[in-house]
Image: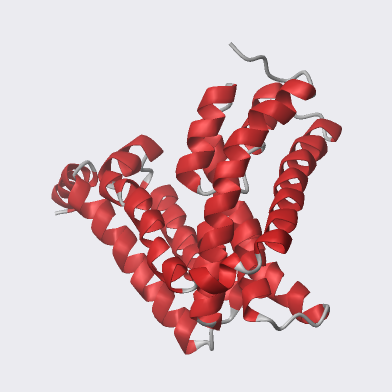
Length: 244
């Protein structure tokens, strides 16, 4: 009986259906738990679902390439889901246009700080060149960060992990830090979440209302574009990357 079960598991584990279904179910369960606990930031669905999925992979001894192959459909939908954030953004466009000056200043300051601090801290701690190159675009959303990392010679898979950690930690800490300094404006809260925690922060921002979600989507989009431009330039100035 046990050998048959093991044989069945081995057959299922290499099919896309198993890990795709398991990932979706893990996220649905994590979302249910998150809502039951009054949206506690420590129980972000992304974080909880990741822990469950990683635990299942370790428990079953499933290599990551097998899981990646089984969840290619979810990876494909990252791009369309990001583009779909333009819908609420368009609804708040007139108000956001009136704020273009502070938006530009905050965007430039946040983007430069994210790139310089990540590379600088990695350098101080003795990280390899490949690691520093992979960490540079960590505050951009996943599709952009992976492509930028590939261009500058880093590891896209490492960058993906860095992006996820940045998004989760940013979504958890940003709300508390904003409350600590007394910021209640939904537009400011949303923009900060999108700038520091990209898509995961944007999902969190929509809980504060459509205005917060729209400003977060704007910050995430603009920061992604600016990061793609600034990372090669700043790395070149630091002597870590050479054009051509």
